[in-house]
Length: 206
Length: 206
Length: 206
Image (tube, rainbow over the protein chains, first blue to last red):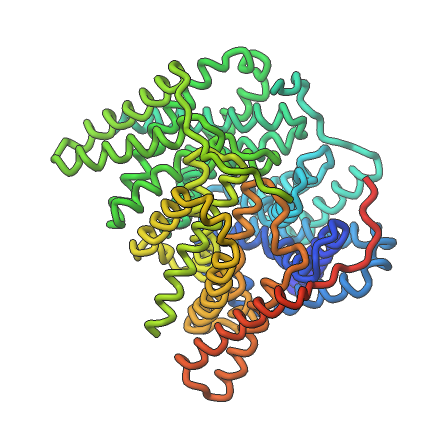
């Protein structure tokens, strides 16, 4: 379990950093930048906890997350220009983040005894909702709705997890393997430029 | 009670379909289309449940909703061009949906013993918040803030429900009658082109 | 405690009024104007209560808030043109509102035994999230991310509260003093035209 914890921490920090960079590019002020950093990092897990009825939500009762987020925010603000040129590295950490968040969310939901389909949804929620809130608050159409294989990788990994769990695989192994599936799917999709199809449809006439 | 259940199911499916069509018109990718379909269908009830402290929220513990939503999403994706030409029919189902959702939300709140005014608000929330989230995520000003008699019909029906309840009408009858009031108000308002007034005010100078 | 209650009531009404004016300037219809008024007034406290697990959320179990909000909405709709010319007075009440909301949110969180850093965040959330939701629903980039000393004043006051509490100051005195600190910081920042810095960064190339 411990390696998953570490990856969770890294993912949380990187999500905070992605929020900071997005807000800074939009010329938000210092507070706005911090605010977007925080909600990007906590948005997914918070939504999951609220829906499942886990309150106070995790980061309220586990201050380590707040310290990690503050650290991520500070690092991103101080080294924003370096980070902007390290997008490939950040991208890798973000990918690790969504892999780990999906599995953590999925397991939390399964432990509460919900329907497996709902649990998959909770896993994906943990991974993607922070980014959706970030984009909505910065007045953008959310990135994840625009063709990249992102949430789809999370869904795929969550389904593999359920299958292997059904087959009796050791949970700790399953966690690592399926987080790996998500990360690999995401990396391959970028490398080979895979994209989600768009449904053909006449655009709306106003 | 059973007919209300069936209408609730139909309403949920139609809400999912309306989300799919909106997102597809905006050229969201396949995942984005599904995501918007899901949040449109569950947004109102989820918000109501969270505010009232009913967790896990209803659709998490009642998988039938998830199946209905997935069915609605699939049907809408496959038959999107047919559906686009069936807007009148869809509109009718959407209207049934808001009528039923209002009454269900109102009753849930009353059963928890909240103030009647708050219960009316919970009824309206159930009916309209899914659409508000759909429009916000697709970067539009929410439709329901723009002149049509929509939420207003829900408020009217909820008030009639409270009145008839006070007068001792049988609950099952009251449900059907007041859902009908909402549906009729909405249909009449479209037919006669009624609209909500806009307050005269100088537009904001930037 | 009683003066804080009164100030809380005034703040709630003024927040509702600010929502009404914003929506009316955007030419929302009558329902839209009321809706934005309500969510502006309850958004911050609701978010705080949900995160802390206080459900049903405060205004659901304390109808006085609903009456205050409705009163604020009605007054703002009827006297919108007078109010538009009284912006200085409204601004003063808004400032009182954020001061009081911050301290109330902070204390609620501390009483639940959360980490002080988290409690500060809950105080700020109470004060600013209503405005963020208002701006998001009216399709604007939230005002508070754009340079003014607003949330920063709340953070400053919350930190002073924690310090004085640590030093053993009487709670009732501490409340009033630190709400005053927030209000004074905000007023001074407007008077002297202080602003939050924006991080220098190349704008995003699309």
